[in-house]
Length: 158
Image (cartoon, rainbow, N blue to C red; front, side, top):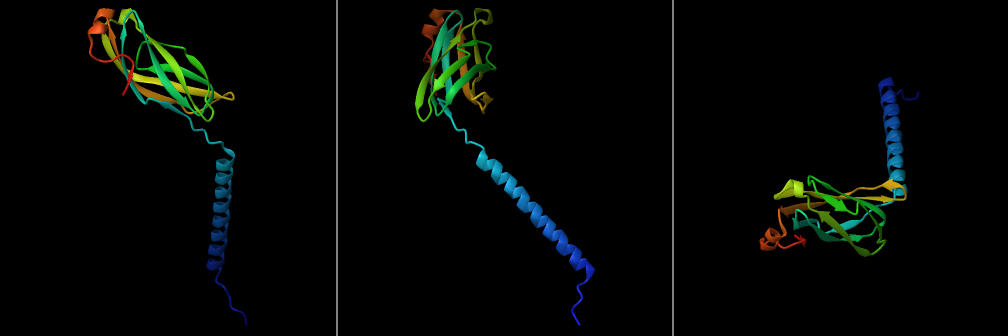
């Protein structure tokens, strides 16, 4: 006579089989998404900048952009000054390009030091990818003569 398998072992075996099938299904979905998603890696340097600006003037800051082809939206966070241009078109696929950003002083704010970030948010093929924040310190002086007397160099990268 054949051996009888207790019912609780049959139920446990069926549950284990369904768990394994579910796990295989989840792994297959994760792998298909990972394989079909393009890797988007781009960079910008320097990662931190400090500069002086006269309240009625402006200062240019240069950044090296790598491995991107499209438009980059530029804004500042935590710094109440304006930045131009607000959108930069870049063709740096597989290479590095230099872009120039101009930060304008604001006389109504007087002499102050601002800390925040310059934010770069790329748009490629009508989609928005991850952005990069560059740590920024701006020393705004009330007059150009005060700017000239200050020992902190203008538009330097840290």
